[in-house]
Length: 69
Image (cartoon, rainbow, N blue to C red; front, side, top):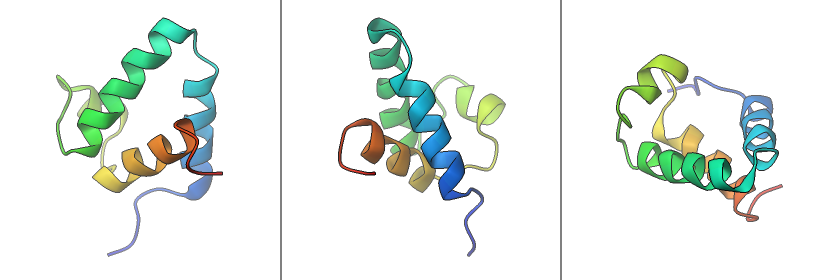
């Protein structure tokens, strides 16, 4: 199965999260953790990330949390 996203999308989303004010950033990181675990996060996943698999959120989190590039 091919990915429904690119590494550029992952990097751009991570950069957007890292640029957010601290309080908002932590909330978004929590939402990404939930979506990486397969949750819909109250419809946010379907509305803003249609077709994105759990791996997209996991890859963004790797960068945001310092484990990625």
